[in-house]
Image (cartoon, rainbow, N blue to C red; front, side, top):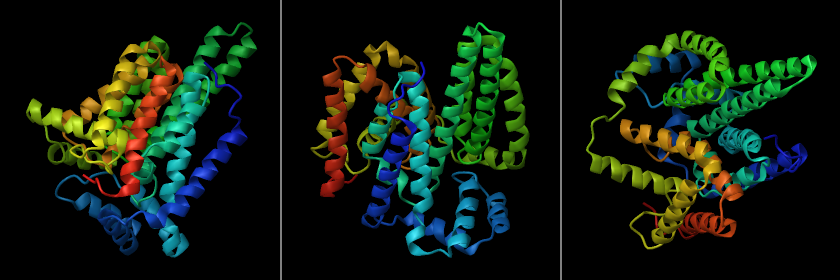
Length: 369
């Protein structure tokens, strides 16, 4: 389904600019985290070549490939590391990612408003959008990848349905351009997060299931490009697989891990699951899960989110910051529920209760995990 004219591009940009301004104004109210200090100190003291050498020399795999660190180094050199500018890249990356994700969701729903609303009001936004960390950049490149993929799906569907040859040719060219965007953002994704390969594997599977043999050629071409470009850091990727995962944990531990981080994804880390406000957030999460299972229109979003989340739990890689790799799929699921869920008032009420719980924790500051 093609996105409706509302909100227009101008309105979309206005909302994103306002969100960026709000996050920028609030950045001093958000504490500087310990890992921010480490990231900034490293980026400020090491050249790009030294950063790459340190990454390759590590005895065990590092948390993520160094693309964001290299970009941050360039930004700090450009701005002279002025204090008010250090968090600006994260804010801009996150807001741009939200805009791209809204476009992608708009192709699914016919409107971009639900995604814009849930993305702007989500209690986790300050944690992912403001601190100096690779999380915001990962959100941006995942949003760009999904925008390219949904554009390709839309264009290939239009090419199949087009009657005049000229119309089919135009749609085919558009599909090619969309796939180029998809490939470029995919490359940035796997150079930002090792888990990006799991995300791309799921996207590739969906492409084959929905487009059949028509997806094989572009998948093979892009797969070859990504594999060749990834060769320089394959040893580091293998180190991370060996030392950065926790496979073979008990079912009880994995269930507890999934429950905690699933709850955090809904309300943020501002509410610990063992405090009394958590009951409201838990009730809202349960209601939304039931609504998602009952709403066939969001089946693709639900399955994608659950498969990726289960992979993260199974690999034992979850923590507060790494939840950002699931965020685009979580927000697309929520947007789909807001748009398609019935009774709609009850679904929206559950989302409001979930978000209000998180913002209450942020405002009070008394219920941290």
